[in-house]
Length: 373
Image (cartoon, rainbow, N blue to C red; front, side, top):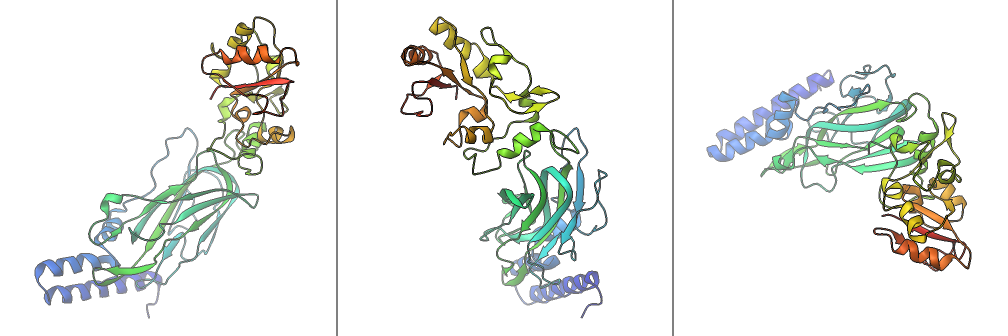
């Protein structure tokens, strides 16, 4: 029995090399070289390269903010920022998963609890794993105990998968818009496998990079952050992944025919003392709402434009991917006498999509829904 983890790994690797050398002597040179490559450093040539050159280490994030880094083997250290070291379970080994054989096995998911919200989470590992395995792992993010993201990992270099079917690591992470306060790193499948007649195991040594705080408000969430988190709820928002950027929120905008007061009449959230919303360039542009006004030839009243997911849910909309939540739609107020004329006018605007009364029963004859996909 080895007296320490490092000594244990060294002895096992040495034993593996000895077995490989004996095998090489007992077979032709080609088969011997294959076996030596397979057994070196426990699993494969790829792992040996990773161990020597530390291939697959964290890629630098080209951001204008502090990027925090934690990595295997450094349980008391966090680099690049002043945030405290997160809690990691299991804590020994630190940020490592292994199928065993050449070191004690650790196949449990790794849980990471941050001291506050973080975003722009990225993951990279070195080590080794089977290319054609059933799973190469997954990163799951949580905020306030609720799952907000789940993303499968990818092989760092799929072209490295040769005849031994082993490569040196994975990359992963969450969408840059995802804000989390804890992570779970799910492992691979299988943990142990055959490598050209030798016993192999998966080994993943992780490096995690992230940005501390909220994307918009920094240390404290502001109204923009609050709205953005609504897009994580599958109860009120589903569809293609979307979340407005912090810079997408505006507090004053107008067109030739519509003032900010008209555009913002249904907004409910304020930032810096002003109401904020998201309004797409197509909605405000030359073929947007001004074109509908021009085609109609008279003043129009906007019932609503941007609606955050909660507002969209509260007004009774059943469209969980409503263009109102993307800032690309408006509902134009009508009466039973004007509905058809407004509907036809909007239908003549290039690029505009106009819903019928049956397509949008919430409007019926009281408004016309127009959006710009």
